[in-house]
Figure 1 (cartoon, one colour):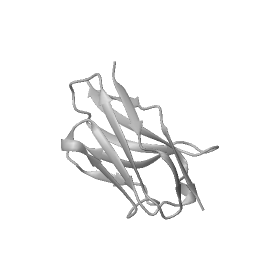
Figure 2 (spheres, rainbow, N blue to C red):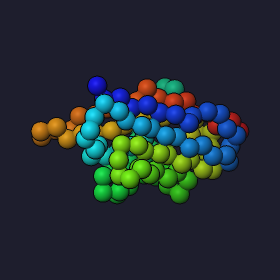
Figure 3 (tube, rainbow, N blue to C red):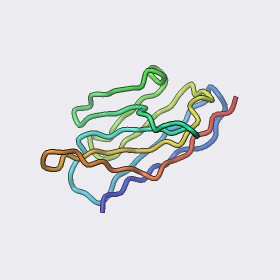
Figure 4 (cartoon, helix red, strand yellow):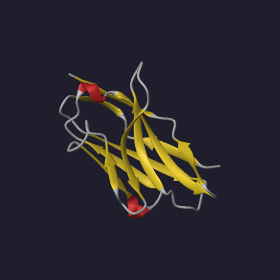
Length: 119
């Protein structure tokens, strides 16, 4: 059974930094891409950053220049370095991994880790 486990969330003051980690287990295959999403209370889950197996990256405009996504050796561990945090970044952050199975992608999600930024 494929599992994604996040760590590194917590509380920080505005302007501070946090580093999230996500490690996958239960598969020998490398995810086609991995990413981070977040969901604040009353809002939909939204993309924060993604990285493909070719190390190409995508960022939400709101986090560009402040957050950096990376993958260990293009494998199934992904990190999110979050700098210059703002109160608006407060949310539950979810790790996501996608595997191409036959002709469609299957999504896997972690349980989420809370990030709280105080002003």
